[in-house]
Amino acid sequence: MKIFKTIIYSLAIIFMASCSNDKSGQLTGDITVEINYGAHKEKQKTIAWKPEITALEALQYAATIETHPVSNFVFVTSIDNVKGERGVTAWYYKINGKSPDKLAINTILNPGDTITWIYKKDVCSASVDNCKK
Image (cartoon, rainbow, N blue to C red; front, side, top):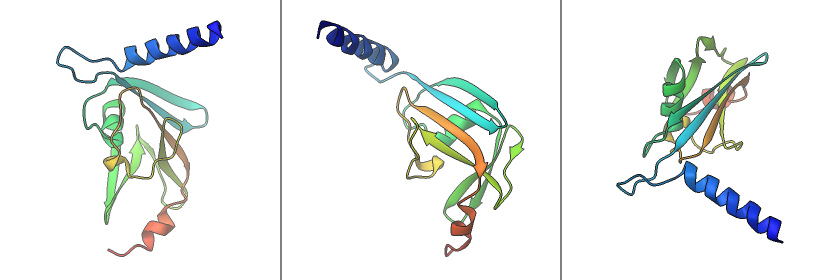
């Protein structure tokens, strides 16, 4: 039981250090942006968290990107010159290992979050093509 309490206490200290308050009482911390380009090529960058930063903004700090608006959607079409091909491959993202239920432009990040961008089979274009404008 003593070892368990020590582990929990240590994890709490690590978490508080990564999401500490600055002198103004505001939360501070970092966001980790991971990019999986496929074919075993990956990139990771740590950026400073700021209030109201979105998943799309974090990606913009970590890589060169291109986007394409369609109706109410904003798609990431290219990251560091790795371009998606509509209906074939596309860029998707996860936050802390979970698929979000919002577009990257609307997803607000928290200190300590890890956002992972993955280049994989396009499974969304058909549903967007059928949406009403």
